[in-house]
Length: 310
Image (cartoon, rainbow, N blue to C red; front, side, top):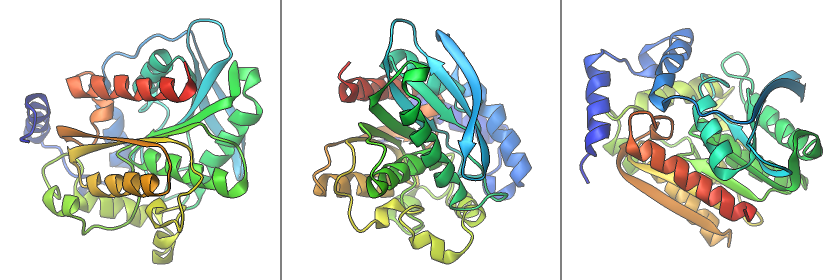
């Protein structure tokens, strides 16, 4: 379908403001740009409790932010990884969507400020995210959580990290995960899919930007074939937790996300997939200006509640 009207208006406004592709900016400029876009998420919802902490990681302390909903626990837990191409983004850029999921899914959310490239290249980010997920499982009760109901989730590169942590947890035997929420996830370094060709320019995330992100993230070309960087290349997806895979019609990452959903189904992993028509990469964080941004949060929360049995 054509671009839906609110998405078209947003893209027109971005173009009129002279917004540049990430590939045209420095790392620091990109980090500031994603902070400037936080207002698109709308006003942050209130939650019962927010706590900033640091936890032990493989190469030092990892900052996390714990969100707790109203009511008596123990609550299920969502460990969330922000997007930003493994290079940009932080706890603040994920704050509004994570607050919404905390309230709507009635779960404790642990948002993870993993190490970023290019200062810390692959596999620093997945190593931190896996360590934080193990910590959440081992310390669930101390944060009002239920260790038997833990999900991972994230958007874009955060969706990649959620898929990778699910693979790591399966491969290493712990923790046992109940669900994975994969919002337009990066699953493979392949810039020649139909969705990359169709949506290379003009739809928020560009092909050149993804090349820029991947080049900053990987230490070598060989890393691109590692399933912990490109989960679509994993030999088997058997034994992974149920998934909700979200894609956007006008997104270079659409096809690799949908290919991952199909591979999960072929591996007998219960998988729900939804393509949001007429919109673009990033809409998960645009609930302040897009009705589809509000809807995807509601849909994600509903999938989490179903997985958690709440």
